[in-house]
Image (cartoon, rainbow, N blue to C red; front, side, top):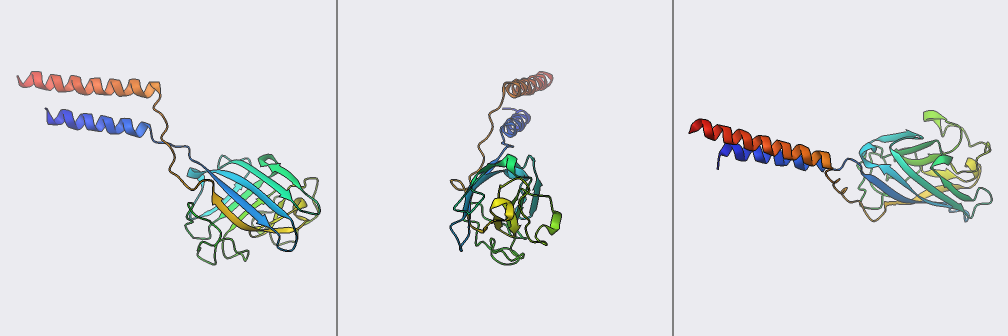
Length: 218
């Protein structure tokens, strides 16, 4: 068989394989915030677009944002501010690894960063938080939380700490966060009809070139 034809065919097949590589990779984390001094707790899940989530890195997503696909939080046991809240109730999400590369296949809380263990509410160990109140920028934790201004959705009041009732209620600290079912590689997207036609045309062109070369030699 003509060596050039083999090389061209292999190159074409490689191109076809790249057509099926997945680009969308949703990554869902379950999380729990808990107040050790009361019964207040916030349990929920958040889905990120994995290709837009820096790890390591500091992610500060102003909502709506293509990096945050879904968010659900249920607050219970609080003196006020109980209920279920969704993506529409929040205006910002922060996910900061503080220089560490987190293993998404394991429990995130307790993993090493460039400072302390991830999940430690000290300002030197990263952050994960949700914000429903007024946008405060990088100094979001400089001032004490104020009374809620209409929304009772929980609001970030300190690193890894979510305050019930718009931030004015019980401070609940992150105690657990992990990927639903463990981190897995995204499944390949199917090649659509247009891609198959393009592939067929490329293979036909390669075959035609091979036949012309053989005819010239004879």
